[in-house]
Amino acid sequence: MIKYIIFDFDGTLVDSKEVFISVYNQLANKYKFKLLKTEDIEPLRRLSIPERCKYLNFPLYRLPFFALEIYKLYEASDKELIMIEGINNLLSKLAASGYKIAIISSNAEKNIRAFLDKKQITEVSDILCSNNIFGKDKIINKFLSAKGLKPSEAIYVGDELRDIVASKKAKVKIIWVDWGYDIIEMANKEGPDYMANSPEDILKIVRSLA
Image (cartoon, rainbow, N blue to C red):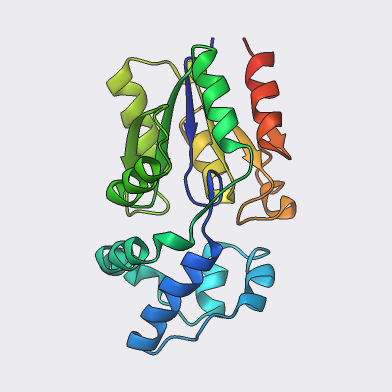
């Protein structure tokens, strides 16, 4: 029985593409990386994270060292964040149905809480974050252990290939959403348990598992 719905943040609950472009280009200007244009986003969605870094001449291994700087730049650009249409209603319906809601993200907890507070979203009970973009499975396992949950008692909702990989490592089923960063061809490389084309689909999937 599902007790917790765990959401990714960027690309899943919010459209943060414009914030990503702004933050990345500020780093690119400072450290002399290739600048990112809006028209680059679509081809980048078809690439893995290492391939994206190669395309942008961005050293992936240095990402953890940039984390604090990225978080600060993100915080300054959060006015450009857009809540995915239908997410507010989804969270309300999930909470009303008795499900607990958490967020596990590679963003900073401060940034996420600030956005939720601004939007007066109160349904989220737990937020866990890590600057290791490939370490979500460890955070998921930590969360399950802290809450005394079996993997079958939680489901993850995310938009990227790495979300699918992390969920499978943690033995938690995943709903992949098609409005985020990765396209369906990327998702199909790992085969998510479920796919959602709208927030309403997430609700239908969760209710079907009750």
